[in-house]
Amino acid sequence: MNCLVDGNIPPSSGLSSSSALVCCAGLVTLTVLGRNLSKVELAEICAKSERYIGTEGGGMDQSISFLAEEGTAKLIEFSPLRATDVKLPSGAVFVIANSCVEMNKAATSHFNIRVMECRLAAKLLAKYKSLQWDKVLRLEEVQAKLGISLEEMLLVTEDALHPEPYNPEEICRCLGISLEELRTQILSPNTQDDGVVLYRPGWSATA
Image 1: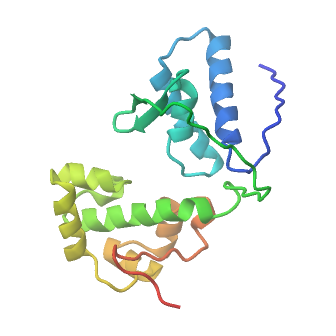
Image 2: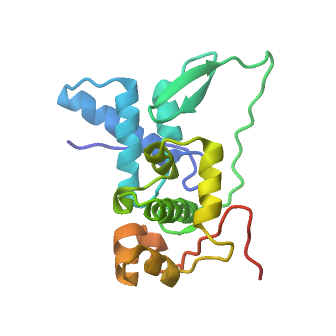
């Protein structure tokens, strides 16, 4: 399959040009193969596919690309993926602008650091509660496995994590793994050398 792609959306400008290209590629491939998938299924596949270039993003951009409808905004929710119509006030105006500042999300760590912080927090909490922590990726998974409310989850976090920042060495000690295992099995490629530090909610680092 040979494809020629052209467009006028400024790259790395925060206008979701990469997600648009992934969605387009998915739709074209589906058409060429003569396959049928629902819009929800296609959005989920495209969101997962985009992570292979190194961005640990969610699926908001891909979902609205396929689930958008004329005349209404959408509330996008996950687990499972679903979209609810949101009526906009008459005369609502959106300004789409380009600041001309580029951010290559796949080549830098900025976009992925918070994702990795949340992943590490989820694994530490799962370990603390004697869950199978190595299979856990998201905080919502820990909450679901424990069968507790958000308020109860906050209390677990207060009990499990100390106020001082966790550096990579302490994270490894808590999980019983080596620094190499932390780098290669948990962190994304462009955060492996950044010395990710974890902070408990309500606390911040001081210079």
